[in-house]
Length: 437
Image 1: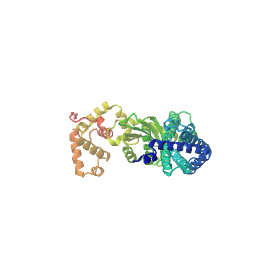
Image 2 (image 1 turned 45 degrees about the vertical axis):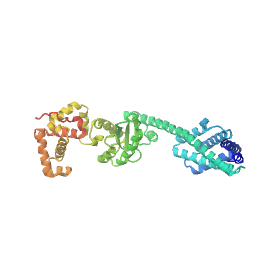
Image 3 (image 1 turned 90 degrees about the horizontal axis):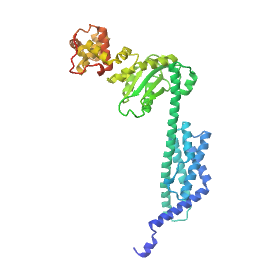
Image 4 (image 1 turned 90 degrees about the vertical axis):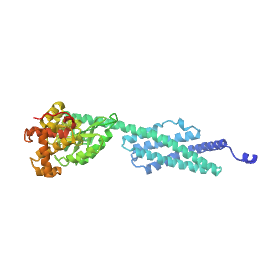
């Protein structure tokens, strides 16, 4: 390269200095038009983003836009690096107010993108007015595009964090109010039904299905409330409930739940069980539907009474337990003393109480036979088995038990039911000898 050619090509440092000089020029020109720029951005955001129509919010939007524009223009006019930026009070307060008004974070994020696009267009118009080479204008345009991207990325994270934190505060406040009101109802204290409905969004004059839900498994320290809330909505639909459920978090993995039922006292237990089994680690106990305040209390008490069943059971179908199922309240009593119950089961069933698949098949066949009133036909239909298979299994069950099915029939039915509901905790490990009387 010749000396003349070298002298005609500006160095990289010189080029960067030229760009920075023009950045300051653009910033100063835009500062003189700041009121016009703020009005343009404000109008663009209001026309493009919904949920910002309330007068209090529009006034605060204007203050937030003014704060952002003033900060941006001050920084570019005075060549202040982005790493020295500080949160803008008006912007964070606006995010907080949006959360209090129930405006979603998506609206806030969209407002920043709409506003930054409008401001960048203003920058582009100023760049077009500059008296410099086209390639320098292009470099300047790239500079502002990168600068605005970094600014908006940082600022949106700040305001979205403020919005999210305020939402958490509001949820905690709402939960505290709801929890206090529910405790008043459950304890029989004085309360106003209309105030309860207003503050909780749930009315007490319907038919209520009470439940207790919790998550078991790994990550016990994690907050499972969102999972429980989502499950509550699905369970409400499955129960035929009208309106939103009432959810009261007890701790990070447990919640009380009520939903109104349109079907009166009819509960589709298989459908509820399907919903529960679809959520990993979820266990739910249900009380019987009850009417009014008394039903609200009683259904909750019943769900609490059979909670030990779902907590103890190892069989999948007992992750959802309904108080109204035949024998469930008795099973709850027996689950409170597993050692005694295990001995009762072993004494009643003999080798049928062994924890293995063969004994389980014999127990299920015998249990169904007794439930159908001793009908071979109904038992074969329910279990989808040939009648001769049913007979063979019943004979085998008597051999394993060491006495006829008709002997101590009430104890036999109860022992089989307990095994079916609780599973392994009341069974005998393989290899252990069972009594045969």
